[in-house]
Length: 402
Image (tube, rainbow, N blue to C red):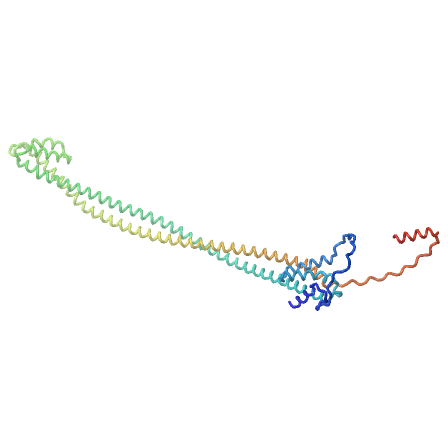
């Protein structure tokens, strides 16, 4: 930096010679106002100056401050445009400094490209790892999904079993209820016949005073129980007579009535005895159905819990797979960005090589061309014949004009 400051000091306008390079600064002429010059003809641009400008562009790729780049660019053109052996030491130092700067810039570009290449290699390795994680996550999600579907089917089966067991319990209870209702009717019928036998038949057989009322009440009961019509027709006449006045037919009617009542009561009692066993079976069926229902219920709850667990594991696995997929996309995105940066860096380095660096190297070591050989002197022209004075004066005037 101290060398650079010394060199830049030479660019300051001053009337004294520079302490570094010894070159006096240019001073504007103080004479009278010069006469206007005729417009100069347009000249072709010097290729060397164009190369100098191209070389100066390379300084913009460096990390030097902008003011330094600007001053170096201004001093570079006159230094590079001068042949190597004709350069002033100050100019040589400027060229060397710019050369070092361009070389460092080239190294920085290459290191940046190598760093980007390393990032790309690391990204490719990370992508392989992320893809492996994604494949594993997808396999896990698939396995969890299959387990969930299996448990879903098991839950449906257990739900059907639960429903069937529940219906079986309800059917058993309804059957038990209907059976109990039926037994209640049988028991009531038996009791009603017993009451009719003791309250109406027995008194009528013995000869009760209020025969008509007893006969009518007995006939109503017998009609309700569906006794034979022949009994109902003959019975009032038989019971209307006094016991001593009854004939054989009357006695037969009364005997048949007693036998029929006895059969019916015996049938009701037999039904009630059988009902006790049936009731025990029905109660056992209810207990069995309730046990099966409880087992089905527990199995359904366990199946539901397992299904919920499998579903949660599936959701977790699918979320992990989605995260892995997003990670792969992110790596792809970063790789694409790095590849673009790499291509951009390579293009930038290629342009730097072909442009500023090539222009600088082409002028840095350029030497002055060897002097052209001197041409042989021309022979004097032959003497011309004398001409009249007037003609000679005219020719001389033309030569002066030419």
